[in-house]
Length: 421
Image 1 (cartoon, rainbow, N blue to C red):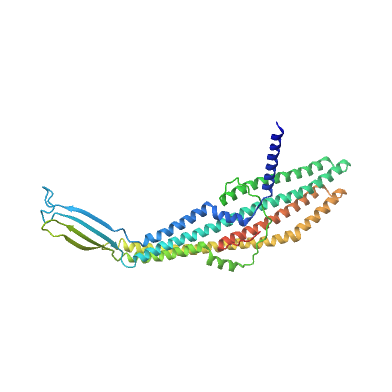
Image 2 (cartoon, rainbow, N blue to C red; image 1 turned 135 degrees about the vertical axis):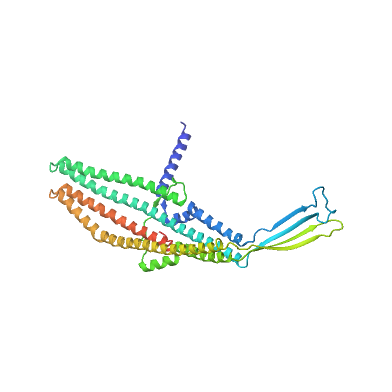
């Protein structure tokens, strides 16, 4: 291989290494991911298209039916074409237009508007749920990385135990079994770390899918977490949900639409009418003729048709009202559930941070010192270190549980706080 080719190969290897290093150093920003999801998430785009399509139905609903044009020829007798020779032989042309009873067009327009508003509220609900989903997956990835950090930190402590066991074994103060025990515990942590790396890959695929990316798109490591401020009471959250939740708004629009449908069903007791004008063209000594007519439909079968339609609309209104109440109860229950999660997580994180983790640190240091001097058995040292590890993992689990519960609360009450991390 020539020197020039070797130089080119070296340059390519360096560039690949730099790109890989940059990908590892890349940071995933939550707000950027949310904005991208709002632009590209297929479910959001489908909801937006449905809401836009519903708006195009409004002018259609209030439009009059298409006018009808008729043309034809009337012959007198069967024997021959006698246009201009017989008085009733004529070419006929007519135009007709149906008109709704006054008030019906406005009600049809309002019905279409309410339907469009329901879909618009549903579209907003989809956006909020997608934001919450992005946040939860992002937080799960952050937790996995943080657990890896904790495990790596504690692996070094298990290495201290292994070194102490080797030293005691070398001096004849401990059996080889203690060395194997210490090494086994360290390898088990390495196994857990590898499982966390696999979990990150799965979570990144789900997050990319939610955002609207290809599942193998590089994501990067989440930036350091900034705790979300949370000062609202349970009553304030429920009040905000009843006021701002898109799901509640959708139910209210459904009620408004059902009320309009009742009015429309009652209007169907009144007839519509069609106005038609026609011209008959004749030839020769016969004058042309014209006519103006009106056709009115008679709601003769109102007992089985119009009256049933009114009762159907009234039942639909009752259904919409009950669905609104059911939605309120469901949201209130979800708010209470997540609110209790937030409060419990805050208490537990404070307990872990201020009491359990410092105490576990002291216990481990005392235990390892006692093991070196032969006063404490190895199994006690390992159990103290495992408790220390568990407390730190539990601490970060509660930190993330609090953030995820707040994200769900924000989706429920119809709010999204865009914070820079």
